[in-house]
Image (cartoon, rainbow, N blue to C red):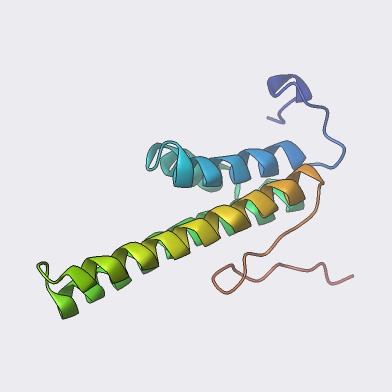
Length: 139
């Protein structure tokens, strides 16, 4: 069943813009406010809308879902490697882990804010390096 603009209180200029904004907001919410809960809602939205969402919404949902997964995997794996190599009691291990986490996390927040601005403008966005390729219409 198609969603109406009354659900969000915002009149879409481009089909799927509301869902794109929600996806990017959940991405930022996962990083900044309620980690895990926002990610679960984002996964649910992706599974629910990946096949029938308008192209703009589908693209933003795909980007946020994949980048959330890859970002989480990279942070966990690299932090575990740093801890395994340096040990828990070496102070430089924690310096490297905290610096890595801070740099990656703040980079994802910065790109998430830019992606939210793109969604609000009704434009597509690809996260650098770990974002999946944008599907182009073969027109």
